[in-house]
Amino acid sequence: MEQQEKIKIVELLRKFADKKGSQNKAATALKVSSAVVSHLLSGNWQPYTDEMFRKIGAQVGHNVFTWKFAKTSNSEKLLNDLYFAKTSAKLLTIIAPAGSGKSETTKKFAEENPNVFRVECGKYWDAKFFLAQIQQQMNITSESNNPAYMLEEIFQKILKLEDPQIIVDEVDKLNDKVLPYLITFYNRLFKKCSIVILATNHLVKMINDGVRKQKNGYNEIKSRFGRYYEFEQTTAADVKIMCETQGLTDSDTIQIIAKESRGDFRIARDLIEEVIEDYNKKLITAS
Image (cartoon, rainbow, N blue to C red; front, side, top):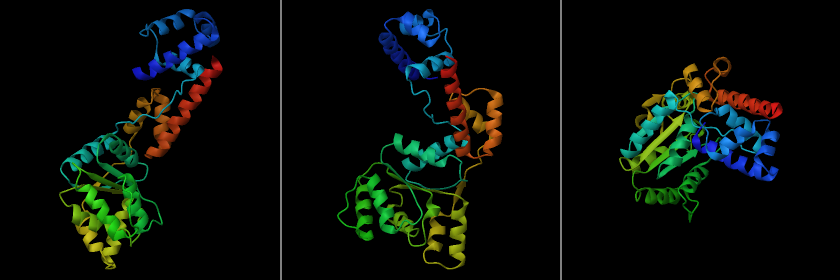
């Protein structure tokens, strides 16, 4: 448990004790010794485990569980790749299986770095909606809904920024009319802005099928975006890192989660959250 979280629990414990009228009454309500309450409020935390903090936190109103970013092998590599691409205005195409953690990683990078604009594509997007989503991330209030003008507004702002980066996640959800817009982004922003696209293997199939069927723009798309960097499937070691990052250390539970998640980051996260929520409920019931 991080120090900041312990500080929040102790602050809530102090308010709880004030509400109860004394530290002794707070200790009785929490079913711990008065020494525990006294020590925690005085800053003597060394003797007490994370479990004790969680037990008290669950009773004094602390939001015990907030998902913490886990540095798996995939996420660490992607963070490094994103930084390198950003600072060198590189193009990056990431192919990753569903549930590999790519979206969470790119969200973290966009939140923590300036001039990074991330969009997560959806099915049925047309060109105007796609460009409007990018403009929204860039805080551009467009004076037109014409795609050509919208593109120009994006380019004008991008070219004024230091080390800009556009991250387009789930690109394989875009249709044949929208996907070719990536060519224009590439042509206008080459060596001036990093462009990162992420998708599943379906994108590879889409591009290869487009080239084979001689669809407009697909040869250019493959030429520009056809070098892929592939994520590995989430491993048992990754699941262990995810569990331990959230404070879950029981080896048997970790093995069960690793087995049931079957290499899917999303399933692993859901299972971890369920285990911790159940654990916190038992803490409150037992208290």
